[in-house]
Amino acid sequence: MKPDDVATAITNALVQGGSQWMIATIVAFIPVLLTMTLVLHLGRPYVLRTLRRCGLRLGADIWWMSYLLMRDAVLVITFALCWIFFLPNIVTGHALPITGPLAALCLLLALAVKLSRRVDDDINAFRLTTAFLVVGATLYYLPQVFAIEANSQTYLAGFINVFTSSAQPTAALAIMWISLAGVCIIGVWMFVRSWNAANRAMIHRLEKSAPEAKTPKVRVPAI
Image (cartoon, rainbow, N blue to C red):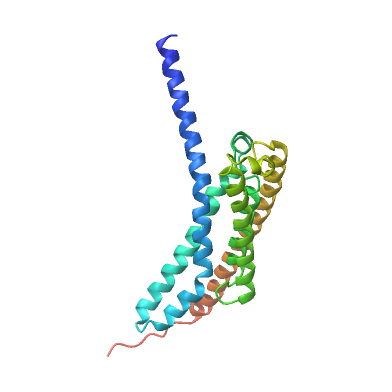
């Protein structure tokens, strides 16, 4: 074997090994982020009780804004990492939870509810967001724990064979494409809604500033 062939083989091994390590790390770390998302979302009553005890207005504002930023940022980061479930080669070539794309779709639905409704003021919107988060976490936890992480347990062989993407590539791709279509539809709806909201805000601002521009300025004579 020539030195160039050896170098190429080593490079390919490092690249493939690094890619597999990164994918396995993301798949194993997503449950942590899902748990944090649920804890921060369901911890809203505790945050509100603590908020009422703050005697300083500035401290209450900082506490509330920090909570909102952490809660929504963790949700967005979790959905961003779940994007690996929409890559066909990774879905069919690696052992992933077969319902991972559906879990990502539920996270996006929760984000859509947060964008379109006041979740912190509307109890029905809060319950709807909670339902999407719980369903998404369940769709991820069950195959991840009982199929991916328990592949050494022989009595779970049937469950492992059904809920592992590499073992069921046809079903995994079907779930992935259906979920991706849902993500695209929701993404287009969120974009159109944000665009219309920005246009309405700009029109309202222009209408508000138009009377002020038409009002003649009265010159005050110098004394």
